[in-house]
View (tube, rainbow, N blue to C red):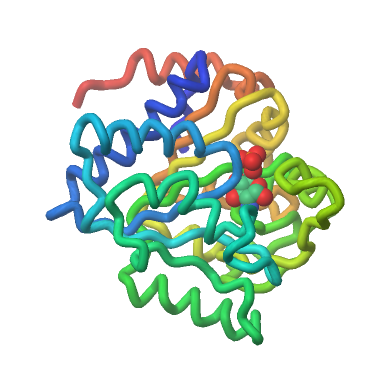
Length: 259
Ligand code: GLP
């Protein structure tokens, strides 16, 4: 796990955008499968990618994308459905084809069958080349809450009270946050060829420390990333504030071998 600690949210966003840009430019004809996350963490990175698309000609026209998760029972038209969120905040602002942006159907009559279909669709598309992740305050990735099997596949999950209350800020007063979701599993996410996890702010410091320096455990679902060979964690000073080896990670970046 490579841990990159940067001073500001802007620097974090720019670094995450660099990872996307390099991956797209290195893919033949820009044919790449991106794994996209929702939540507030990647928003500035998406904004920077939109800027590079508009001002520097970065093209996503040959890319396809798979979202991590979706609320069950929330119509696609709802502002907080992840189907809509990713379009409003990213994919409708770049040149990716709308039908190349895939997400689990939270309105499916049979959510369990939909989960299996979605997992198979990712595999049929050749798997994810570059997955971006945020992290929940309880260490979840996607919507894999503590206790999730480290090998889990896309499935129906129930949110923790902590996640429901964390996500309440996105919903208007009087609305209830759905408690059921469809999410790629930890095993599914782990099959992405490369993973970039981003987080900012002190609220994420504990989760970042547990993920990268704690035990590999279902109690902190993101800790499964310690088993992956190509994970880059891009965070700001505040999110890094509980890392025991923060100085070492900074030293590694300063002294990065050129070869
Ligand atoms: C949400 C999403 C995750 C996201 C996480 C953190 O519930 N399902 O994909 O990474 O929780 O959200 P935020 O970035 O808004 O803090």
